[in-house]
Image (cartoon, rainbow, N blue to C red):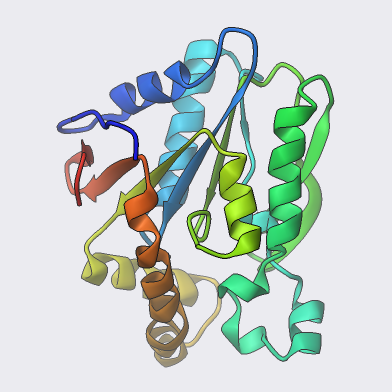
Length: 228
């Protein structure tokens, strides 16, 4: 694990500084943000993207969400895994790893990447793009630090990984609200959180100590510390 910095209060500006410092003078860098479902990793990624675009220009930073590598429901039905959607094996981990490696190896190419449509709960091909001008790529997802061959290959392409930590009760409340918002019955939403999301959170936590930085999603902003 690399040395960490200490940031107090709403540390978005300091986090943006750290992200910007990852970029070499003559190349590009990939920042990974991991966290359990409902931890706030997508929120942090979105805030960093907006902050760095204001600071450095729209094309200086690009977004590659791991959610774009969800297997479509048609494949999950074929595999009998639709009721486990969101588990590690319901993603195309190899495709994700290959894409991250290509982003590093081919900086002069326009590289189209999949996104994820929350209303449909489906991946969308070529929804996003990494332009040649992009110096920093932010990718966020649950399993970037999972210790399996495919996920290790994805991790190998990333320059630094930050782990977003949130109180479990807060995470679970957010997840239940999210599932209800996107169409689940409240009882079904609560059951899904307990039987699908929380076992996934346990898996994610097993890799957390490999992160380069811990970012606490606190009530008063982002707080960063060397230890959990």
